[in-house]
Length: 157
Image (cartoon, helix red, strand yellow):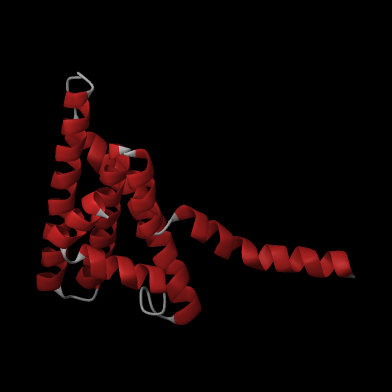
């Protein structure tokens, strides 16, 4: 009886635990960047914001809110440019020639976007809301909506 209960509990909690592992908080990533001075963490943060903005853009487009969708898409584009510039700086410091950075950034954003998309679908299935009620997504969206403040906090935190 106990083993059945434990199995059921593990089965029910596994999506929650895997979801948490997929998207570490921005604060955790910034701390990692500061501790290791790993410039790729900065690109990843930019990619996360781009992916989140693209998901919000898609939601708004589906709701027929084209102006809002375009605004979020433009912001996503801005974050992809920041990521690309950061990757170019990394390559320059390493003495490497930057190659196909746009494709690389788009691919990386696409991977993260899928994680956000799945999380938002799960949220909707559970709460009938894509973002509202998910404290981490609410916080990240709020931060990502202010790109200059986000960049400054990411670099100087």
